[in-house]
Image (cartoon, rainbow, N blue to C red):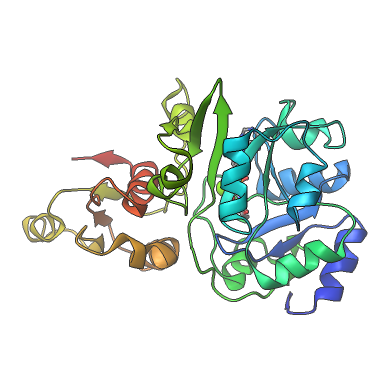
Length: 303
Ligand code: TXA
Ligand code: MG
């Protein structure tokens, strides 16, 4: 059931149930971060391996500070600049954060989402919320409440209606190694925006490492229709008149304008019964870098 009623959402969360929840990036599957049974439910609904940890969502910087042992100055500067917003920070956790949340790691991923309903909800609760993106494992992340309902139906108690996500791409995940600021997942905050605050950052896109590991053939963010990346989509389409081809992106679009609708458009094209979807990469800068990362992971092959 889709609802705008915050008190219903709050009650379910207090009872240890899982709900769909809007953020500015993508919708999440949320539960009480202190409730291990709620956490198990999230993993099981999402069919996600328990080795893949969850992001803890909080309502204020003070609340975040209570869950970590230290706040390295560069990460604190990023938090002050971008929170509430699509920035997730990896920080050393106190034992208030259960180990199941971090899959045993001593670092917890934390963010303050920038969505009025969800912020209000977080500020009313006396526990933080874990929330992975509300898609079945490896599927395309949802940017509307209706898409979450289509994915999970009655498997989630309710979905809080917060409209279409304004960013449409997951948060950028950042941490530190030695004295370097490291980006672990490209996201809705561009690398250049981070660098304007903390100087040069390293990019170690973990998800890519996971994909490259032997035996890992499953694609993330992937449509059921094969997606092919080609430098000239129109030319490709003309050369393959035997195939029903859907053009996803020609690559000359403005990445900032494409980002909010990227997943939705991919999702919709995927429903239309094409043999093949095609797209081209963006220039490797700004949100183009994030979109290229998602294109790479959604595609089966590059030509
Ligand atoms: O925009 C977002 O971040 C959305 C919205 C709902 O907030 N959430 C999201 O969660 O994208 P999820 O679970 O789909 O992706 C979180 C990523 C995963 O790749 C996970 O491995 C990584 O964050 N992660 C979470 N906790 C971590 C930790 N303690 N250490 C390293 N990586 C972590
Ligand atoms: Mg996800």
